[in-house]
Image (tube, rainbow, N blue to C red; front, top):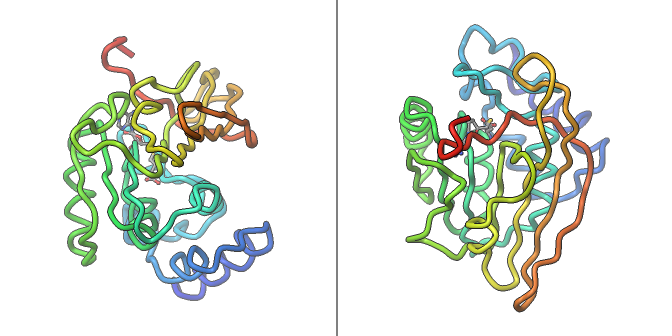
Length: 221
Ligand code: SAH
């Protein structure tokens, strides 16, 4: 399979045609080898227009969603970014290209270890990763200019994450219940943006999405 060709095709048809405009994102996604983030048995699907299983009942997000969430965050080169749900690290690799430093939390130990290794092997240096419950954020490093949550929180945004948004910063997070069968289920979920302006938090709903649920160990789910 010609990955390079498939990658350029993906950028053209899935990203540009659907309105992704940020040149830095288009450039980065023309270069980041998505095939290296998934199991080799799925590499034929690497540039497909959808999520792919990464094991442990989790998925790598659809390229368009990765690009769109990142674009909505308007990341600057000095930003300190917190990512919840590192998964295979594809989104982390993109954030690291755009931001000053990325702090990424993954709850599944094996994924956290593999992903840290993978990103290090790829020569990415401006990231820190740890295993843990992202609902709590990363208190030692807070606040963050931008926060990206890659799993859906059932009802409301975790309060610790809202607190860890820096003044003038913002967070993007899918909210909504999962219902039905399959990894992604059929429940209604919407992407939300939370912005901190002075002491106020302003939130807005963006569009409907489908994410795996944000695991809440404290609630036993
Ligand atoms: N951007 C990732 C998305 C992976 S799916 C990628 O494209 O690969 C969501 C990820 O969130 C999964 O890896 C899952 O294990 C992780 N996750 C779920 N609940 C979490 C929590 N409470 N804290 C940290 N990570 C969590």
